[in-house]
Amino acid sequence: MSNQPLRLKLDGSALTSNWHILDAMSGGASAGAAVKADGYGLGAKDVVTLLAAAGCKDFFVAHWGEAFDISGLVDPKAISVLNGPLPQDIEQALQIGAKPVINSIAQADRWLAAGGGQCDLMIDSGMNRLGVAPHDIGNPAIQKLDIDICMSHLASADEDSRQNAAQQKLFSALRHNISARRYSLANSAGICLGDDYHFDLTRPGLSLYGGIPRNELRENIRPVAQPEAAILQIRDVEAGAHIGYNATFTAMQSMRLAVIAIGYADGYLRAFSNKGLLRYENQILPIVGRISMDLSILDISSCPHLQEGDWLALDYDLVTNAQLSGLSQYELLTGLGKRFDHNWF
Image 1: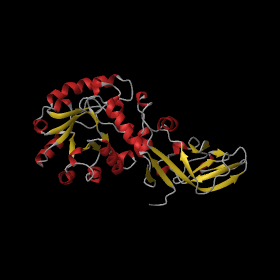
Image 2 (image 1 turned 180 degrees about the vertical axis):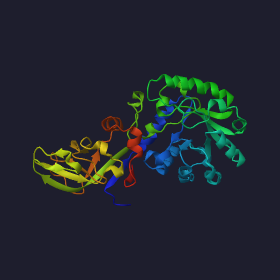
Image 3 (image 1 turned 135 degrees about the vertical axis):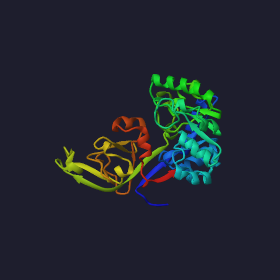
């Protein structure tokens, strides 16, 4: 156990509760879990262990290194690698035994030539990111694949967009030309769009970790991560004192300030300068001045009893902070740095 002045309090019961809710909302489909980017910044090994114990059977990562990190925790065939196999990935892919998600004819040829066996397939239904184009589905290489999950990805599920129905209609039609064991379209937000979007398997990510991409999830999804930072120094300043880089805040009266051990290197970006809030018990403590690389400054005049070493909680409601900072909820989670101690409870 390290003694970092940064810690993440992580609620394991909230994580598993969120998965159960998303699984139930998926109707006749089962819910998997996107655990890429180190479990959205919360620690993929811990996340996978908790979700597998809760009943989750399908896990999605981006890179082969991520698959390797969790391969000892679940059956490797339960892991799908979304970015597919590059030439340099084939040897490791075969060793790990996880499934590549085939995104192109070149990837299909590569996988077949390696004798790789079971895989997944991504179809591009309108996002123009990863995925096989609809007109390439009939290619012999695609037709030869041993496909477990045939999937596509919604581009605008967090909005009431006509693109959602267009993608659902296209995927629903295209899947009849692809022989696969299961079909999957919906992410966290897509689950809220209804049964027509669920198919056999849903792939929630953000909402597992407390994110709210649509209002339908607001009542039941619980926050999982609570960042906290320790006070490094307390100082008193007089009216007229300039605070932080470039003097973007000037004290209008005497103030008591605390310097805390969190900055933009930890994912608490400069977008929170003069905007962010922390809490101590029921007191709200505002950030003053610019966020530095490793440090932030806040006004603790309302809590004069605070001392060096005391812990303060970031006001880190994902929806509120996304609106406040202009960052997405995804960035707020995945940007949390490596210096946090992870404390699951």
